[in-house]
Image (tube, rainbow, N blue to C red; front, side):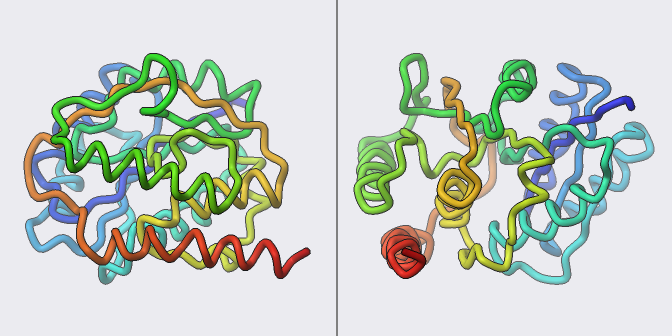
Length: 240
C-alpha cells in the first residue's frame, strides 16, 4: 500500500496567507496532501483555495458553516481523514506562516518511531522570532502553569504544529475532548499520553511572526487556557 501523509490547515480570514503557505508546502513536499478547513471566512479564503485546487491535485477543502473554534475544526477534519486507511500521518499547522514548512520532512522522518511528534519552541534549538516581552512571558508562563496542573512532561503543551500517526488518531474518542477552542491543543496531548500511552517526541522549531492579518489571541482564548487545565485535572482525578 502506498502510504500518504496529510497536512490540516484551519483558516478564518487567511486569504492571502493561505496562498503562500500552500505553495511553500508543495515546494518542500510535492506529493503530500493538504486539507484546508475553512470556517466560512468572509474574506473569501475558501474561494482562494478552490482556485488553487485546479493547480494542485493533492489540495482539498473542508468548508464549515460557521466558526465554532479551532478544536472543533480539527476534530471534524480528523474524523474525516482517518477513514482513509492509506493515510500514514496527519500534520496540523497554522496558515499564517508561523509554522515553517521546512520542518515537515523532519516530522515525517520521525513519525515512524513515535505516535506523536510535537514542533516545540521550548526545547534546545527551539524558540520564537520577534515576539514582544508580553507575548513571550504569556506563552512561557502558560506552558509552566499547564504542565504543573496536568503533570504532563511536554515542554510545549500549547503547540499546534504537530504530526500524529493515523492509527493513534483512530483510537481517540473526540467526544471526550471537551475543548472547542485553542485549549484543544492541551487536552489533545493529555488524551494521547494518559489515555493512549502515546510515545511522544518534541522537535525544536523556530516559531515565526504571522505574515499578515490579525492575531487570533483574545481574552476568551486566555480565559479558556486558564480554566481548561483545571477541567482536565478534575476529569483525570474522577477517572481514578
